[in-house]
Image: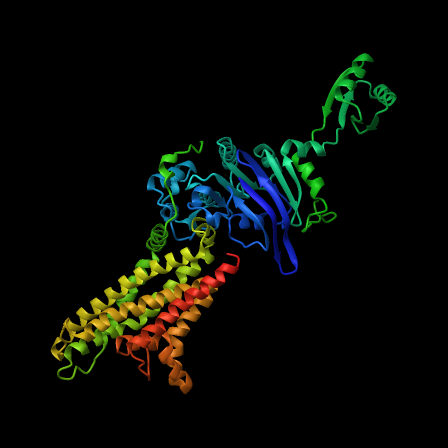
Length: 306
Length: 266
């Protein structure tokens, strides 16, 4: 379990992390979301004891990482795939870190196999593709069979097979009662992987809770309906007191449940062609929440995409 | 593919200082550069030994002369080993590996001590090897000049213990400098400047600098071994003061690194 309380980090005049408090509980995958520059990586580095907070605490399983007698058994982190000396082979990189805790060669071979690096274990890291580098980073994080896994953009550079593998790894980890905290920009992936989300923007926590609750809040509740006689249907719906907007080929209804709309259609003897309730996606919920918190806006130029 | 937990293979894993040292030694020995550094160090020393044309020893001074001459080739290996030690420290940042190192070994002092210990071991082995081979080469090549080995003689032991000790202390200092500055460029400049440039600045008319040379690692090293192998020293402060001075350099650099690391981000 990761517990962050009142964590603050200031670089000069800028508050990169501003009084952040959240928990990533054991047995779940917590997605850490936020725009670029929001403070996700800084927070993760402080949890791992790399950067010193100006205020607040970050603990893993009740203590700061430095106080644990076997840090690799407590937490493994993939913060940046470029954390390997290029001239060293993958296997030797793992052996070197296994040695700190007296972890056996057997375990080194296990994590190599687990991450699909068996074929390239004897290759020097400089020859690794980005995906292989990510896998090596994950293998290193898994060396001590840790109770907490922290990953910063773990699916960067992974092929679809790899993305699926990370998703299953995270879910399996959580199913075993461990803690997973992963940051990502790939909303669709986080929606499939995470049970909880913590959203930060401009260094502050904007929301935290279960993925289901978070996305439900953003649901607009609109229902799209297409029938054989939209004009008549519009009248019926208006009589019910709901709002109807006609788009090019369908009606968008606000304020009426799909079940009631279906009743109206059938009752009027009209044929129903399409009835869709719009479910908010995590992406919609996230974009809505962070709209004001984005630091580095990209702009599209008029006529640029011709 | 599921990450099945084989807890039996890691259940008893614990971070230990010995483990941290073994880790640093593995980091050293799993890179090709270590072979190059070792071969070049030995090669340079032997080259100096075998291409020099000394005027032989005075009568009665044969064994002291022999062992002193054998130590003359240590200057370049000494600098190389120190630079290599500094780079082993700064390399953690240039490669980004520090992120993993400080996860496995979060206590910065433990990490620093382990790395310094590993470099001390490596430097000790190489410097003794260089010295032993140089000694053998001197005995072989200059036997007709009167070169003799006398292991009972005090000066022989002063060189055989002193030279590796100076090299080890300097390497430990270099690790401290590397951890303090984090940058390869700055660390190498500082180490080379301290060991090889400053001591010779006195030759270029900077008299006051010439006198503090005795308190630089080179001067202290020369005083420890009772010979001019580590640099150009106008003053001899004696082996005991020399040892204290060199100890101050290596401990001081490591303490500075420790203090700096405590307060700052990784």
